Every structure is written in C-alpha cells, then in structure tokens.
Image (cartoon, rainbow over all chains, first blue to last red; front, side, top):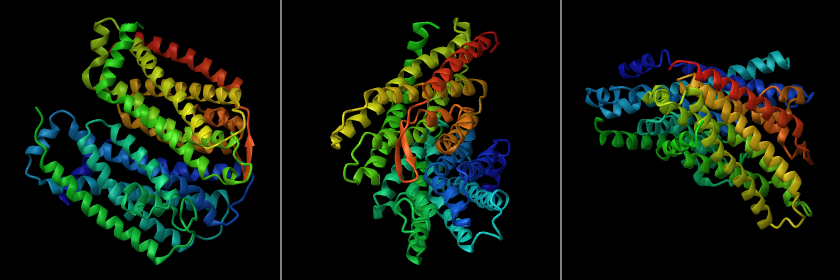
Length: 249
Length: 248
C-alpha cells in the first residue's frame, strides 16, 4: 500500500483530476446537447441517455484518457535523475509496476463513476427522468471498471518504456481504432485485446458495435475472466521488461 | 522564418517519429472510412454503391481520428524545445520563439497537408476498387478535402501555440481529446454553435451524412471554412509575432 500511496502523492499537482472529471462529464453533456438540439426526448428513458453517453466514450475517449493518465503517472520518473533513483531503490520491479498500474486503474474507475454520475445528472436535470437508472447500469459500470484494469497495465507499461508523453497516447488511440474494427467484425479473439475488452464492456446491452443487446451471464463472465487473465499476463510481462532495464547515463 | 529553420524541424522529426504518427493518421482515417463504407446498409442496398457513402464515411472518420493525432504531432514537435532548452538556444542563434513556431508550423503543415491529400486519395481509390460505377464527384471531393485541410491546419496551429505557451503536455492533449468529442458531436448541433470552435468546422466540411437512416449529400460550408482559414492565419502571425518579443 505504501508504494500506491507514494504514487498518488506524486500525482498531487499533475492535474490528473481534469481528465478524470472533464472527459466523462463532457461525454454525457455532449450526448444530452445533441438530443436537445435535435428537439428529441430520450425515447427509451435511461437506456437512451446511457447509450448516448457510454457508446462513443467506450470506443475512443476511454482508452485515450487512460493513456493520458498513464503518461502522467510515469512522466515524473522520466525527468531529471528520477529514473536512476527508481532503478537503484529497494522497491521490487513487481511492486513498481503494480503500484503504477493500480493508480491508473483507480483513476480509470473514478472516470467511470463520474460518467455514471453525469448520466444520472443529465437524465434528471436535462430530461426530468424519474428515479434512478436501472441497477444493470451500475453493474455494467463495475464491469467496465474491471475491464479498464488490463488497459491501465498495458498503458502503464508503454509509458514506462517510452519517455515521450504523447507517444503512448497515440498508441492508445490507434489501439482503440483497431479494437473498433475487431468489434464490428465480431472477432471472438477481440476479448484478448485490452482495448477491445473495454469497448465490449461499454457496449454491453446497447446492441451496438457487434453487441447483441442482451446482457448474458456468458458475456459478463468472459469479459471478467479476460480482464483478470490479461491483467496477470500484462503485469508479468511488464515486470519482466522492467527487470531488464538499468540506470541511464 | 528561414528555409534553414524549416529544414532543422524536419531533422528533429527523424527521432520524434512524427512521420509514423502522420502515417497512423492516414491509416486511421482511411481504415475507418473503408470500414464505415463496407458496413453501411446504404452501400449494401441495390443501387446503393454511390459516392455519397464513402464521402459520409470520411466525414465521420476525419473528425474522429484527426484532432487527437494532430495534438500528438504538435505536442511532440514543441516539447523537445521545453525539454532541451531549445527556445533559448534558438534565440541565441537568431531564431526567436515566434519564428521557431512558424518554422514548426511550416514543417508539420507540409506533412499534415500530404497526409490529408493521401487519406482522401486512398478512400477515393478504395471506392473505385469497391465498384462504384458512378462518375467521381470531383468538385465535391476536392472541396471536401480542401475544407478538411483548412480545419486540420488550423487545429495544428492551435495546438502548436498551446504547446509553446504551456509546458505541461497534458493541457494540449487533453484539449485535443475534448476537441474530438466536440468534433464528433458537432454534426448534431445547430450551425451557429458549430461555428464557435475550430473542431466544429469538420462538421461544416461534411460532404454527406445520415439523417436518421437516410443518406443525404451536403455542400461543405466553403465561405465559413475560408473565413476560419483567414482568421486563423492572421491570428497565428500576430500571436507568433508577440512570441518574438518575449524573452525565453
């Protein structure tokens, strides 16, 4: 826990909160503004509000946002002599990798919580929808948070390898674009690609981008299992890579 | 701004792999356009193989892929000056910060222009290969490509200035990401609102699109795009002239 706490301390003045708060809120507001500008009401109540906020968010902005957060978490290590301090410290590679990825995953989960809160706010304030969204959107949000973990580990690994801030973000965007192709082609192997996994989780129950529209136990289970397996595999791979790294001249 | 300064920017790009990012932009726009074309129900319908389908696909793909990758390109090209004390180094060798920004715009602008023309040409070629028999609407295609080029160059200039002003790359990339959201959703906004941000001009450039299930051809907003181009060019020159008076 000490390593994770230290990583959060490093983020204190990084403005990471702007990505966590603004990106999902902008998605929900953009969906609502489009609906209002078209002179429409959400035909299917909370489902329409969710659809207009979450579908596009899961295709590109979520992966790119996680990429930005991972670059922020690693930026400090690539400056000055911090990389050499990290390499010569007593903390094991596994703990460094796990702590960095955990921070990115927690921030990604916070983004999902903000999206859900923004959907509720938009539904109630802009469209006067009664009550709260059905429970399934809360469960899907938990699944999305879980699906974000392998992307957090992958992006953290890329940001560890690349000193450039923007490079890993470009990779996240292109990975998300490739994932859209895989989802539309309904490739079963898409579940093994982290970017496609968050696409699959965010489209669950919407009937878009290869999703059937039904929330089946099979779809939930495969997404959850793939998230756990990918997280373990990527963490092991990133740790092995960091183990082979040395101080820089 | 001298040719030497522009050549220097190209030399810096070799290690920045900006050519690779521009190639990725071309691949993303052409790939998403092709995907949206072949999966379009309108394209599968009998007699549906018309040029409006790939034009609508490209009108969707360009605002999706261009803003974040333009932000990445500009951010990388400027960040090296922040990291390595390049502003001061260039100033002492006779290139003031404003001139350096103009050189960066000239070098990156050439790459972005080539990428924009290439992605448009690739989609056109794909349309021919997919068997669209109707004559190519050359005027509309050129007009659309021109409007996208203006919007791309304006956004590039905006991101270059933003990256030069603010050391923290999070700001430029965050703005690029939020801009993507604006660009994608701008198609559904009233034109008055669409005109208020540079990302909205991708929607104004659209040559075709869907109104519900119906495929509709549009005329790109040429006067608005031209006005944006002029306004942005004047603003860029004035702002970079102000940079020239600033001490590093």
